[in-house]
Image 1: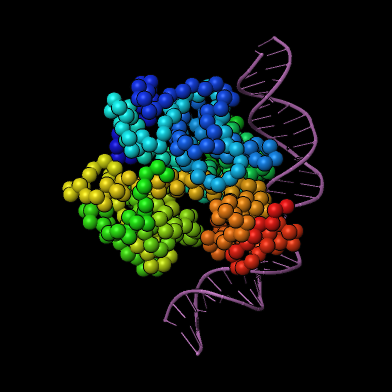
Image 2: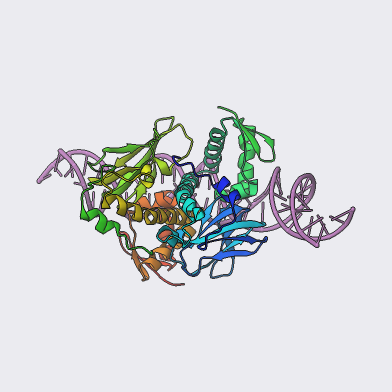
Length: 211
Length: 211
DNA sequence: GTATTCTTGTTGCAATTGCAACTAATATTT
DNA sequence: AAATATTAGTTGCAATTGCAACAAGAATAC
């Protein structure tokens, strides 16, 4: 990216001194926020991870989205008319930056550097979000489990500049990410191994064999 | 949204007078842009529509994303390592706003109102994009065709505040949007009709029957 | 350091789905 | 106004997939 904003540096640098930007810690399983009331809230995961959970009319819950470090979320990004209740739950001890959409318009009283730097950094975070959502859509659109796996493995391989790569999550989460049944996925991974497309080096470390 | 920027008014108001923001017209099937070279380009569809097409190694093409009026796109939003060639093609006579990511940082010489208003309006456009991508991911994640259809129909119904709604595109495009085979989808729509879940009023006009 | 939870791995079976291959009906171009 | 392209609608069939139900290993919590 063009500008030299770095979320990592930014989050290490200081505890928010801005009156418009909160920095909160959450324990595992604590509710970080809900998407029930519209308060134009935006959050950034500085440390830890969280799940966006939907409780539907029957009371069953499902994970709608998973947020990891430096992911941005909030009901601002989820303008979907639905009567379901949505909660964001910390999956582990987490540190979250919470602020309101209006920081785009209103400067804070102190006109602080924290506020200013966040504004500079936000576009990149949102752009990254769009990019990863788009990637996931492409993968979810593939018709077969094999296609999804191979396409995703290729991307991981290209991103790591190597035929060997490590999954960013567990195999169980991979199945959720690709929207497929875990056991069916395991079966397909087995076939891919047997047919010589991939080699499994470790629990979630693979090598793509070209052909 | 909080601020009162309105892309519709904005696009009608004036032809871009800003040296940093181009406004171009394209004929059907013309190439609007490519995602091959990184030039931090951002585009907005003011009129018309366009498809993001991928040409893979075998030469077959597939539609990765579809853009309609007021959608925002550009290679900035597609930081995915892949060797494939990506083109955006006008699907009809279209008017497109084209500018560079650096308008966030650099003001133009004239310090013009066009530039300034665009900057105010951009966040909302991107947020809408995130929202619609997230919705599509939720739908694509559903395991069965029936689930995808019912979930989408419910959203359309809730958005139009009525049990009766019109699809924003053809049935063929609906199948693509939901990542399913069109004939299988038609079969499922037929079952939904027979089982009394929906009523088909017209080519792409349905009523959700509650139960 | 034991218990509990989470993850991986596997399989049979039934259900769902994609594919191919059509026809008919609309739209769009020329 | 005719020709071409796009969309809707169907169906048989084979292949893929989800589901259920396990067992065993690994990681985490207490």
